[in-house]
Structure formats: structure tokens, C-alpha cells
Amino acid sequence: MELRHMKYFVEVVNLKSMTKAASKLFITQPTISNTIKLLEDELNVTLFHRFKNQIYLTDAGEAFFFQCKEMLKMYDNIPNDLSNLLEMKSGHLKIGIPTIINIRKLINLISRFHESYPNGT
Image 1 (cartoon, rainbow, N blue to C red):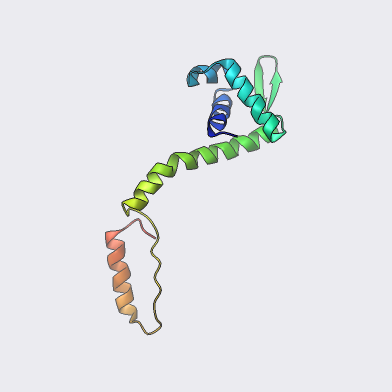
Image 2 (cartoon, rainbow, N blue to C red):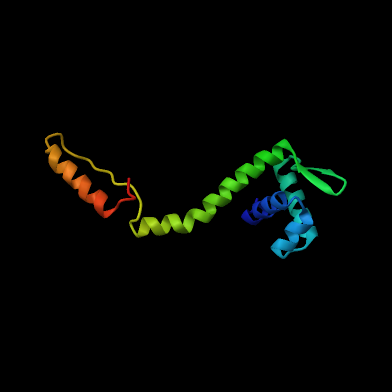
């Protein structure tokens, strides 16, 4: 399964039409149809009920649609997440401390860190 196949599927669902999705994606309608068939064969499920000139998601199609949206959202967030990490806009600070450390010193250290990196956790 390829990421672009999931994008095609999501676009078909959003537009409720393989033809409209193909037009929006600048590909042919047979390419969309073949992609949906490929996904159905690979997943061994039917993703759409086809009735006259309309399509409706099956239960499997709805579950797959939800998962595709989540995966595409995660994929789209990768550059931003990595940028934030590299620029130290967000991330995690892990501290190991001996039991004899002065709590006030630790609180001051954490406060200074939080002032410098307010989005850190």
C-alpha cells in the first residue's frame, strides 16, 4: 500500500466521486478506479458500495478512511515536528538526580529551562 493510494482514497471519500477526485488530483478516472480496486484486493475488503452513479463507504471503508486520515495527518506533521525538535521549540527534558540534591536548586533549574523552552515537557 502506498501513501498516494491512501491520499486518492481519502479524496474520493471527501468528494464522493471517483471522477471528481481524479480531476482534483490531475489524474485519470481509471487510475482512481484501479487504485481503489488495488486497495480492496490488498486489504481483502470492499471499501465502497456502488449504487447507480453513487458510492457509499462500507463499514470497512469507514474504518480505513479514519485510519488513512490519521496516517496522512501524521505524515503531514513530520516536517513541523522535526523542525520544532531541531530548533528546540519542543521536546522532552529528562533529569536524573541524586537523592541528596537541594530541591530549591532543582526547581530553579526547571524554572529556567521552562522560561527558555516554554513548549518543552
